[in-house]
Every structure is written in structure tokens, then in C-alpha cells.
Image 1 (cartoon, helix red, strand yellow):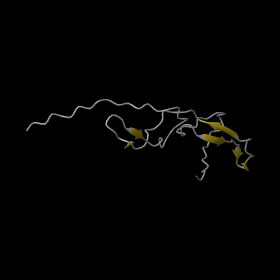
Image 2: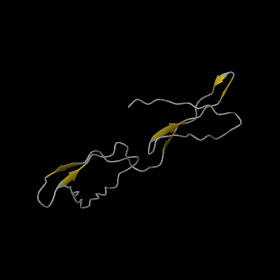
Image 3: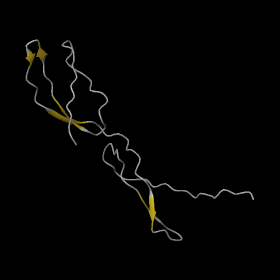
Image 4: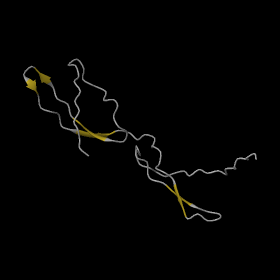
Length: 103
């Protein structure tokens, strides 16, 4: 994945700034520099920081194998957007009654 540097200009009257719309559970390298009409000053020492975890995206398609009269194996792909470390999965199921068809 190619990294793309983004820049945000902050007025000289401020000494803090909120970086918004960052990706969840993503590592960023942050640096600051001052500039004036003479040009850009040197960058600060980079700081590596990671945003917090968020709710995971949906797991991938559900597939069924090893279907017998009283069991089956259900499988799925990990979420495309895990947004953190996946601790486990909850598999929910219920009995589905077929619809009564009127003849």
C-alpha cells in the first residue's frame, strides 16, 4: 500500500489542531513544522500514533459444508474492515419455519 502524505495548514495563532476523519485502528506518523515568508522550517521529530479500535465490519459471505441430518459446518471470511483486533465471533441461529403455502 502506497502511503500518501497529507498536509493541513494551521493559523499561527493556534498551537493545537484536531486531525479529523482518520481511519479506525490505523497507525499515523505525525510531524509539525513552522513556516514564514522565508520558507519552511525543519520538521519536528516524528511521532507514531495509532487511532483507537472501532466496531468491526461485517464478516464475509457465509458458506456451509459438511451438512448432515443434524449438523453442519458454517464458515465465513474475516471482515474487510476489522477496525481493530478481532477477539471472536458470535454465531447466531434459529429454527426457521417454512411458510405455509395455500394450494
